[in-house]
Length: 238
Image (cartoon, rainbow, N blue to C red):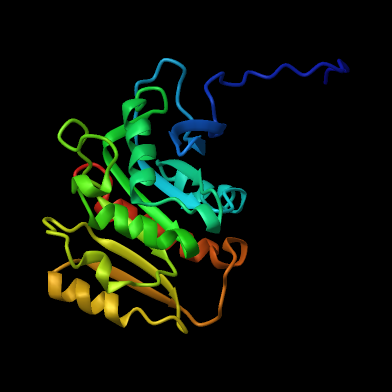
């Protein structure tokens, strides 16, 4: 047995942990920068592998980083866009601008530009629903929709306060599937009835206990339902 204090390790030099990009500017709106945190699964240095994108919008991005590592671990890039706060909340146009930036830089962040989904919670749920339901209506985009059309594969929502007037003037085609996570005390009957009328696809989950904060709402089980939904509707060959 050797008495040498030196132990030689033959470890691989390929990344084994996700790569975290913080304070990435993904656009300018009303004189302010749109800032995002981007988490990319580990890839080899010369790899051209790309992953589906989950584009999240929240007022508290730090709360999503840890639970959404479960999504990253299952082969997704997660981009978390920070809003300006309730007094200057982002709208559908802002969200679409952020997504278009990421799709235009898909190679840099190993993103599959044809497979992406939106996620919004609490104050940002309405904006995400608007972004997805408005599709390529020019009234809901600052960029030219003919030059940069968007085709989201899915929309995931936590605590949506449904406003029926949102969809009154929209001519929807190929409505993407929705994932709905809601407090039992906050009804979603109107939205699910509207989805049924549109012939849309959705999965709904009701929380028996109120959980306003992502730290308490996003348990490992709930995160697995996210991954299962994304695997079903967003991943390649789906």
